[in-house]
Amino acid sequence: MDEEPQLRIHGELALPTLIYLPGLHGDWTLIGGFRHAIDGQVRFVEFTYPRTLTWSLDDYAAAVESTLAKNGITGGWLLGESFSSQVVWAMVARGKFRAQGVILAGGFVKYPLQRAVRLLEKITDRISTRLLVWIIFGYAKVARFRYRHSPQTLSAIDEFVARRTELDRRAAQHRLYLVAENDPRRIARQATLPVFGLSGWFDPIVPWPRVRHWLRNHCPALRDYRVIRKADHNVLSTAPREASQQIMAWINSITVKD
Image (cartoon, rainbow, N blue to C red; front, side, top):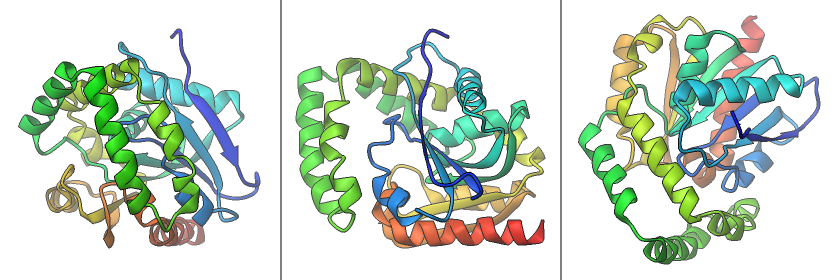
């Protein structure tokens, strides 16, 4: 691979390691509020993906594993946000990283609305860069209201906007294609490590009732699935305090049992 993910590490080595893999936008620009909320409780490792147009999900998984290994990280909890739930399943299937547990944040197994993701992929392909910029700046105004209680996220909105380039759009389109083509249901059925799900109540992107129903009926490793009422699809960013408390409760419950 010509490119590698970027990685940042926050927190002490002795703390549990929580590895954040981002959603479709592919970077850490919206995770600041959650990072602040969970500070001092975990060793927080966050990723930004390269704007690749060629990687498979297995390539994503291998790149994450390689970057972690180069930084001396051989185990920890995997926190897969939305798109990255698919990267997490690929890592589970590979079995090369010593994951202590999996947390899906606005994530899924096989995406339940295949026609919708195909349509979004086509729209992303046809949208002009000028229109994309207009949409992104409009989103930035909305985001400043959505994240008004999270100053750490607010401070990163300008960086989020700046990263939305033409190549970034094409990389997001490629990730949508990977989601549409992927079916990790067999992996989820056979998973043996603890699996947890976290969603925001208002989520027009990933229908959590269908995701939760499938996991409860087909994933024996599922330990718990929680929905935060005040949050939306970006549950880690729109409810950072509640999300961090729930995730720490899960991590501590497994640590105590071990």
